[in-house]
Length: 206
Image 1: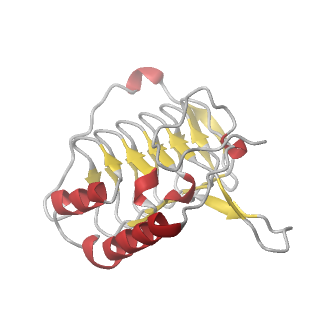
Image 2: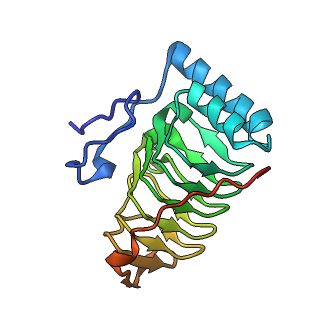
């Protein structure tokens, strides 16, 4: 039997290697209703409010874990906020999509550029019921996702990795690798000594 991630936990054990082997159970009952309503109100009304404190305060009230000095820009679409955690000193650009159905864990000093999409799972196209397969995503410290990157469910992006603009990532990216293309492939490696900076970016009205 595949290991199952607890949908109430935002930390995925580091010893877990293959995230595609983790099946996140879908929410049900009152928790599902609360999650749907909380996310729907954020996506329709709150995500355009030009103040970081209001947007992040609402998401925290919905169960999302957000660290210190985080810039989550306007227009972000958030699904299942209670299954998403963001570390400190991160930047998430305009109109990012966070599909938290399978769980998303984002480390510290991560830069996710505008129009990126992190998907919470996929469908089994050979299943007659088109069954949903929900897998978590882990994005480790100092990762940079350039504009319009798509991350599939069940993927781990290693520390300091860089994903070039427009890439589609369907497999794990090792630490400090620079990848690009569809599907993403290795371009070169990054200097690990560069990963010592700390973001403190929260522009007014954005």
